[in-house]
Length: 358
Length: 258
Image (cartoon, rainbow over all chains, first blue to last red; front, side, top):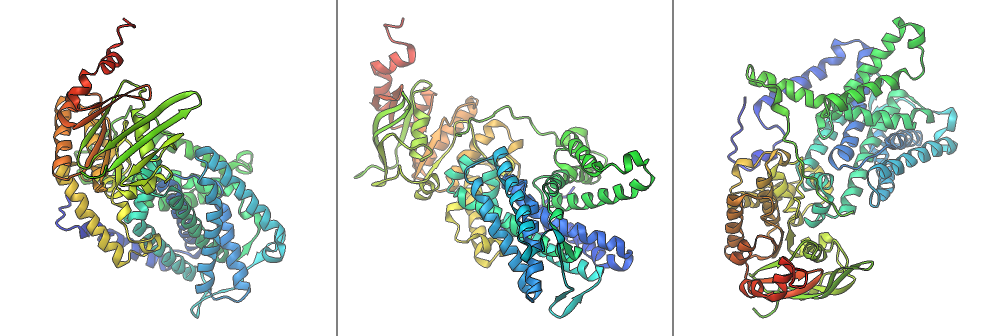
């Protein structure tokens, strides 16, 4: 068990709270840097997907886990980012310019989607964002002079400041760098007034208002940033797949993204990354399992959504804090060994539900 | 005491035929503790919500430091220096006590979101400053022990104090306390009383409170406004109001009802 003695306010602002964290995250970074040498290309390729989904999960976490605004149309932002990147690359824009532009385009779309969030909440917001998902999906199909419509669009090879990103390893390092920057950005937000305003809105809009937080402004910022992160992920996704077509960005994918962060653990950055890793892992497991499962089960079209659905139900029932919640428990078990008790994470039940002004 | 800090003029709020607040007028002077009392449904909390602009009045005006504020948005009211607590506690439950207090400093931020994103030096500076301010509140209310606990894990009495602390962290000119002692035990109520005295005397903050505990009201408040069914019954010192015929009738039931 580690006790943190704080003697300066500066300690509160540090990204790493103690030397143990520096050590473990350092080790993780080393392991990740070494991964392309240690593992076969196929494995690295899957890791790239984990990194990309982590970025979009991070954005979704910021919106759902920290600001409490639901989005069921996040695949739309992914699509905006991916197609923007594809189109801008075709126009000959360098990656350093097209990536921020893709983020910006997705972010602006996010602001547009954020508008209903200023008026509706909960289920109604979910429906409004879902509608946007359909609009973008349809728009992508129709705008075939930019997106190639149903026949899709192919991306050229990627060059970043003169370095050719032509292997899985190169794309892995690029994605890793971008993910790291995104995580630092989100962590900065969360330890600053903007992040606290998000959390305030999530937990009680009425008192957030009375503390001087402009609800409309911060909800819009949350949507914009979340969408921009999805846009960044989309741009990388485009380069990963090298080929884009509208059926990659369907409503089902929005739902899967949502499930991903719920399973990972709402309200934590770890959750977004755990969720992404889990998602890819299970997907791979399903692909592998298909071969030896009896064809009646293995060839079913709805196999993957069904399995994700089961995982979602299990998470909500048994571990509402998701994988991250389980991780905390396991860590505490070892930290306190042998003094861990079963009820340690039980929260005091609160029977007080306030009457909010609707 | 030249001009009132807060002036309420002919304030009314009607929900259809229901007159929740009807033609209420009063003035609150700087540095005073002003109590609103009345039976349930008298319109006390509604008046708070009207002052903090969560509701729009049907008629009448709220004037703070000489300016009409009833048309402003709730966040503008906070910016002017009006802080409040809620009857049923509206804390940010999944944040720590310190974070709750820091939200109270929100109005004093100098950075915009992109500066926060990059954690520029100005953000760092104000963060340190905010922490100093929050720490003053923690010292004032003896919350050291709970600094890093999640609000959701705290007992009711402590939450009540945290909510008071969050309002104080705003360093308001006017503090609206909605039933500060409700749900507290005798000891906690006693403490709350001392804190409100300190808030008035040491911090020089004007307090308006809704309170049912008459002993607390008479101990703390300089003046009391008694309401019944949205209308003013009596206004005066605690002793005057308690002796008022209409107040006794409203609380205990009039002679005609008996």
